[in-house]
Image (cartoon, rainbow, N blue to C red; front, side):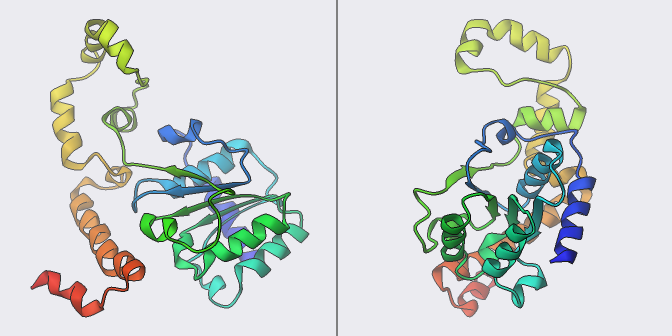
Length: 242
């Protein structure tokens, strides 16, 4: 438990608040149970850590943990949560929930037994989460985080502060809007770059390895996520290469 709290504090402190995804302001963070779904690499973990850092909550009241941590191979989520709440915990953020067997059943029990606790969960296997056991439908709010929009890409890559505009605003004032954007960037040039490697935020780390990482994500979905949900034989998965 102590090591998890140390890792939680370290992760929260080192996350950058310079760029935030669109979903940050759309989530009802007051809800007792929030579930974030989306493909691997779109920024769910960063979003969770940014919220915790921005709120400047008491570190003793907060814990971020990934359920693929070895700690949970020998400790149950129920026992961990009980200890966390007994020590004053109020905000529990759990990543990679699909990696924990029967997670939804334990989350249901935690939700019912600890009304003072706020939980935010995230998972990469959307199908696995939506097919999970346990009645979370009336307890949880589900949010889907997609990849970067072209506008988000421009803000992230070029440090711009382009605001989203409604369809009605575009219809009423498209000429002025296009002039303002064109004065700052070359839209067609930037859009071609966006199509090449702008959808996943990890392009910022290294564009040269972007497509390699993308292939790794696809392989993980095929080899891990799909067989887990649909009980596909591993040999059948390997046949895709033949």
